[in-house]
Length: 407
Image 1 (tube, helix red, strand yellow):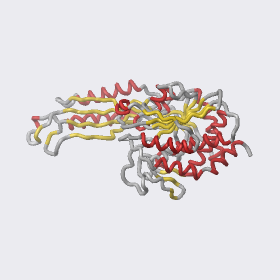
Image 2 (cartoon, rainbow, N blue to C red; image 1 turned 90 degrees about the vertical axis):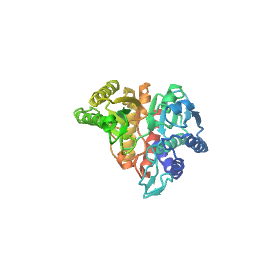
Image 3 (tube, rainbow, N blue to C red; image 1 turned 45 degrees about the horizontal axis):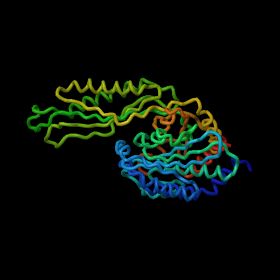
Image 4 (tube, rainbow, N blue to C red; image 1 turned 120 degrees about the horizontal axis):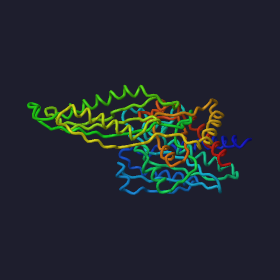
């Protein structure tokens, strides 16, 4: 039996245990917002420790957590050292958006039906807490001479940009890996992704009685003109094409609007939040400056209104670093062997924590347990689910890859 076959056999033999571990992680909510995620870290550390994976707990200072819009965060690191050599980091995030409506399964039960596990974060990305932990256990079960080390990084603020998760760990030099694999899906190796700019725009007018509207300034009317100008940008974005396979063009979405006082009152304030996805070829500074100018020009068409613009998030695009080739080659080789089909390397319109590592000069890719598409996973929708066979096979691919890189 080859070493790869031994890894596969160990994972098969311990797969029921792996599924129970994932169920236990799903059963501790990590809705973000509000982002009270330290209790999940405590439970994860307890479960990892019971498997022999000693876990460091790194609470983030409360003032930094509050400034990021969250309540509590404790980041986890499991360090495995095998002597001189390169360190591979494996990063997954435990924070998730709230479940929302429409579920036919309890979002915090980890129920299994027809070979799939259901629950918020089942597919993104508590599943890769288990993928990475059990891949490491499988690797160590071989008791082979290894060279280098592994940092398992389990963090809790990807939904809010990663700055007090991986960003904080990197800034404080708590992890200094040579290569990185971060949570993703099983049927492609992601080497590039879009950037994301999120802004909050508040339009101020002057409240007035609806019976005498001329005595006020309608903030909603001003907001409508601004929104029309922003949506017109989407037409222009379609004329811009990325050269990265898997990524199309930039786009803009307005995801939340609130304002006004009552039906019979001219609205004195309207606030909306926008999300602008940037292809890797775009310059984030120029993108933000252009949007601010579009907003200012549209606002000028409604006399009397003023506008405040606050940047909420700037996540730069993931630009592939040349040193990622050992990761790409190993994951593609073993992905094809385990899944029985070629595994492409391409880009994705999502944004992830990986960019923070690449900005620090650490080559990284996105790969983990999951279906072919976000749509199939129901991530950020009701009935998020993961095919357990994808979990099993992705764990084998990661274990084999770690053997290649550290063996």
